[in-house]
Picture 1 (cartoon, helix red, strand yellow):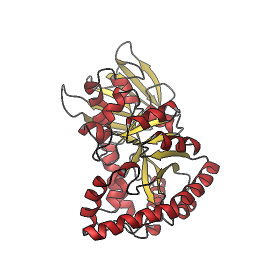
Picture 2 (cartoon, helix red, strand yellow; picture 1 turned 30 degrees about the vertical axis):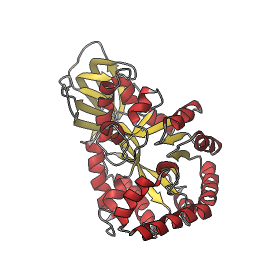
Picture 3 (spheres, rainbow, N blue to C red; picture 1 turned 90 degrees about the vertical axis):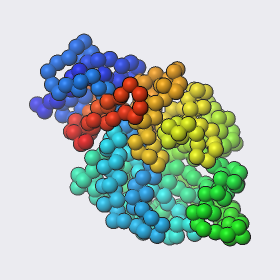
Length: 379
């Protein structure tokens, strides 16, 4: 029988931290002994937590498009992304792949296909340390978002889709100051060009958003996909998400919207970089404010993979009412529950042996010392 024993660990269980031993057999957690230590690999008092589950990261796209106008080999980009993900203690990752072309990115039809195919190929060829799944990030105010969705939504690795609208003057960019500050510099536009760009984006939203969402929801619900809303700012946005059958509220921009989503039974997801930095980069509500209000369920690394484990260990220091087990649940069990994964996300017998050994100095950034997926050491 294949067996691995990890002893003298601080085991972060769902509701407590205990010193003990964990036994792995055939890729699963077989036993947890909290009454003492046994022979095996001595973890020297380090924390042992479940493998982190990431629901929304743009990091694969950042490796695929490392510079404006530059694309990289998709499998090489994925492997580079995977190395960072696994090194950050993430054992299950939903790679966010944008669908929907607009003047900012050009026609991305081929790029979407290459990225989806790369995830499938790399998984099949056992190239990856973490288990990768796909999150279709649907940009609704675009002419081909529904077309891209139809082409890829039935792929067996697609497990989540988000309904996104970055139209200037709405949601994340309810005020134009942040939108102009970001896009005018990024796109190198004059004031007149920027004004025309904004008008064109608003016209695209009027033309495409409602139809894109209608078509995407119809197919996605038939396939049984989990849906997330994005950047809800008002109770009206939340009511719209409820009508759409959304289960996950990604990055609400106000406390009012987060409370409404929570009361409606949706899981509320915020960015771990927001919590680590202490604020939103767009001036929206902070993740810490949501934690203090009791409306924070899930954390996502968004654009910095290591921010997840950093935030999970930091949150109990910033908000004493949040215990370490509760903070760890925000990046493990609650993430799994939000997308219907029942075989992982906690230290419990019978679940997958996706594990992370973490050294936490008295103060400062935690260190990921080892990572196991399905009982096999991958980092």
